Amino acid sequence: GIYGGYQKQKTTPLVEAYFLTLKDIKGTTDAQRYTAGARLLANIAEGTALDIEVPYQFGHTGSATVQKKDIKAYALHLDVTKNWEAVQWKPKLMVAYDQASGDKDPNDSANNTFIPIYQSTHDPYGLIDFFRWQNVRNPEVSITFSPTEKFKFTPQADFFWLHSKFDSWYNSSGTAVRSKRSGERGYYVGSELSLRVYYDFNKNLKCESGYAHFFPGGYVKDSGADDDVDWVYSQIAF
Image 1 (cartoon, helix red, strand yellow):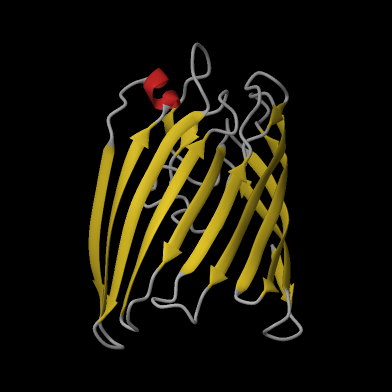
Image 2: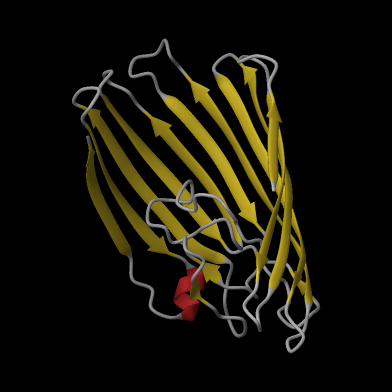
């Protein structure tokens, strides 16, 4: 693949474009996937930045023994951040939206499932790793406060819908958490509320801790067990 960008200087917009290939030979599930995309990062006002990325995937899946399907998939990332450096605790607000297409009809000749390749699948789709950039609609809002130079914390809220209820719900590794392609089911999978706390003891020792709670939505209740989920972690970096 190829990935390139241009920025005249640090305060001017950054424009990036890429073309990536993925050839996955598995016999019955061969895939030749091409991803073409572009990204724009720009300051749109004082202390306000816009980040937008749009990739499109094409190619084909299948083999001589399995029906070949044309890949037609897309994704979108959009976030706006606003800093208030002169305000106490220096709040930084981020409002984001992520969307990735899902397969509209498993029985037709097209595969509409966007698959994120060559990227971190952990961020920004919540802390519990229940989702990734695949058959999902994910609005997100967070705000980071910095009471001191060493201490900051970030409350965050995420909401999740399936893009297509004829496709599966996928977690961060690409594993199908639930697959319910018939019967009563909705698009809304659930919401996640989280809090992350950071403290830098010094330039060599940093710690981070977080807690998240997942509230299941109608799709979860329509497809099986629907318990709430709690996740907590702590880590130290030296």
